[in-house]
Length: 470
Image (tube, rainbow, N blue to C red):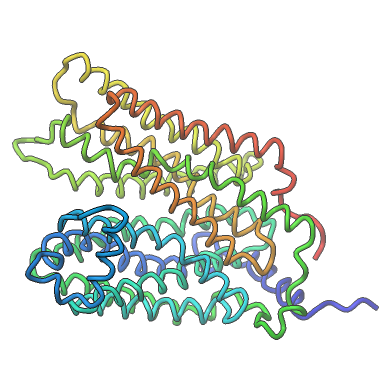
């Protein structure tokens, strides 16, 4: 008689329960709890991020204050040994860039910690506590660097593992997985809209520490939501280092090839985001110079363009979820790689649209209308709704069992390298005419779509759902 391992029985029971659980928008109840927790975590993250560079450049790194920051002298010496002497604003930008860059590296180590030692639940809780501590430490001027360290470690423990738990709610062939990550990303969009308004207003109008404190409170609320909904979340695998050999099957040749392929497509994913990420970098600078920002006698702040993008992104994510739900009732729903390729082709249309006003400007035309911002964000966000969250779904499903947390951490690397690349591309704005600048971005995003389509054609079977019985 063949015996079934306990871990396999638990997984089968969980998959069966998930299939019949449609209590949250047609998805398992756990998705609602995880999405609400992610909303508060992202609220804390984006609230703090909205204030950080302003706080550093306008206050903490001013000559009369920077001396109180513990460990700042050796850090500044290390930075300036590479970049040369930095002004207050330049130093603030470098520190901000280092922080936002390493945010996308630490999830790899958080995934290893969860997969190999602590399990996801403990790691997520530790991450939430570290992030809350980091936000509250920001209220102490001398503790800036320990605060940023806590935040980096906290994001590393939290981010990849909570996304992995979203994937664990579904069986390997459950088509709801991609739309689940889109719903999950909706929570992020709500946070992006709300966090700068709440934390930013408190920080700039009341006091910097009030803004950081609000971010810390938001993180504690997120932790409370996570613990309150724990019974609706996937059960922990029988994972600890001592039982790993028994609980986790060997990866096998197919698993190794899947890992190699998922790592190999990171450059394509990096190219897929350049149009979206450039909206936060070069687009405001270009708009400031060439866009008519006066509406009804009121001069619209350039920073408000980010709120436009966040709002449109929220609406297009809802539209994308509804569209694929409608599509699945009539036709076979495409897999994640096909969706991402399609998303790239659509998103490439956003910078391509800017060729029209750019060429008008180069021909001596007047400043362009602010409505071009709505056109850019609408097209870009329709495409991007099928890139980032669908990529999360792919890496959650196609990663070998026991490596999901690590692979999602690796997935976030494309954001790290992509943002570095976008920063370099933004420098071309001073070298290239606007039409060539935006055409380059359209070509890069479209190239990512073509590359993903090629991956689909050549390696689609490798990334397809494993139909082998458990």
